[in-house]
Every structure is written in C-alpha cells, then in structure tokens.
Image (cartoon, rainbow, N blue to C red; front, side, top):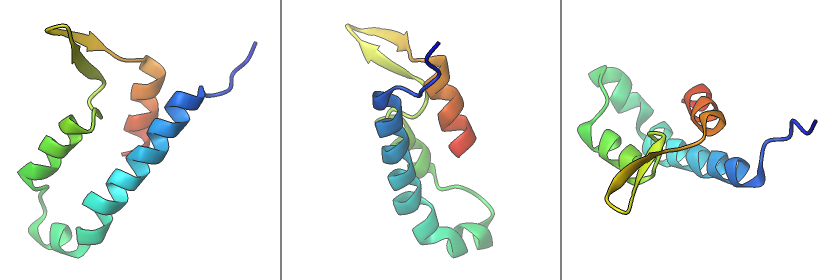
Length: 75
C-alpha cells in the first residue's frame, strides 16, 4: 500500500502555510492583544477553500477527509 500524501494535497498544505503566514503570523501581536480573530480572516479562509467543501454546479461538494485532517492539524 502507498501511504504517501498525494501531491495535490501537499501543494494545498504549502498554500495553507503561506496563507497562515500572511494572514496570521504577520499580525500575531495585535491578534493576541485583541484575543479574537478578525471577521475578514474567516472570509479569507472560505475564499481560499480551507473549509473542506466547495461549490460545483450550484451544489456543495465535500472534499477529501485526508485533506480536511491535514488542514485541521496545521491550523
């Protein structure tokens, strides 16, 4: 059996790390002081496709469970 993480999911993980670095780490002192996440962060999470589902043909389509687990672990 091949237990390697598929290349597409590895690429998504790299994009997620970039997203976190740009959206969170750069503003971490301010977020820590406020003790809350800005609403725009959650909008950007959705726009980036990080919630585990997407819209195709007017319907919600669930993504890979492995991808969801990796995203949750990274967050």
